[in-house]
Image (cartoon, rainbow, N blue to C red; front, side):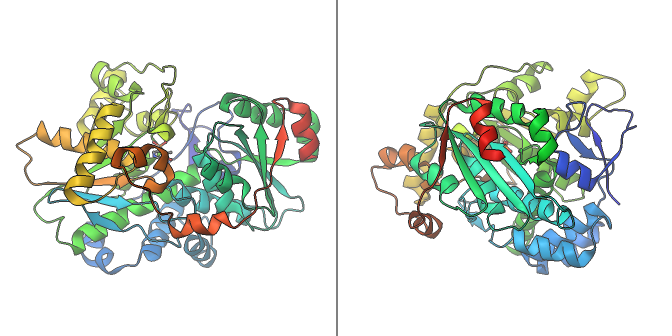
Length: 447
Ligand SMILES: *Cc1c(COP(=O)(O)O)cnc(C)c1O
């Protein structure tokens, strides 16, 4: 059975079950849940078994290793197969760089993996409960889209997605409000902070708490992180099949905002996956690169960039990374442990644009702005480490270029055709509630 602890409970006195961690999201002390134990596969698994596995089989093997009997295998297999129902192909960009395309899900971003697996688990844990489960989530765009797609049609669950009026793109709004059924889109006359404040106020409102079973589909939920481990294994399998893991260092470059994706990679490595090094590319929000330089973690006010899903001034998963590399001999050595395993750099919008143009011209491959941050970070790291000639970089492609066509179309002077998922969305009518940024109108909707 899997036991989890809060990152703020260093002595590990308050263990909780996986079910509790998934349904609660955030620990009572404000910390994030982390597994007590991260079990590893034998080296033979990677050489002999992994290369011939399918992606859903890999996901199931990783999930059952981690969950260690917490959920009956048949149920877990069904949920993993329902969640991981689209591929994560590795695209060879050039000799040193491969792109792991994580954007083939319904919302065209990697968040689909985590959101879909979380949705399956929440529905499973709720199946023998009398009362409906109400999920309340605030979004600046991408999370809400992935959550809406993941939970649509699941029995026993209703979802309210709060998003700021006029602050999400028309396509993002369609991805939130285009589902109907158990997905309720709530357009708030305010900004993202108002949405978040409303969600928090609802969670602590006595009247609501008395009548509704609540949970949040927050990005810090441990179930989302687990699903993100799966595709690091799937990437490595494809490197093996292509012969790219032989006699080369394997370096993953992860475009990062809240650092959930990177944390999942660090967990994959703990599970034995042969990853040599990580690079965390950020945009102008450089809290993490600054930490690696100075040893001091200093949250900042968010700066707006063209890779806006990474505009994060206080990356919440930092606590999990610190926990993973925690050293009893103090902060300084925790910092050194982290620095040994990864590098991080901040990439400006101009550098991001130049990188997009360069690869569109050279390889006719279009990177979205987030992925371009990852590519740029890998390339400049490689330039500074000429001794590592044989390093194969895998850059996580976090979003489909179409999602950010407002940035890309003027850059390349072309109009982007919509992918199949977008075309399917256009035919669904949009329906949403509009409210002022106050608790009362939200309460009326919920009750
Ligand atoms: C959320 C998001 C990121 C950042 O991922 P984290 O896990 O928060 O670091 C990067 N790119 C895209 C497109 C995203 O939606």
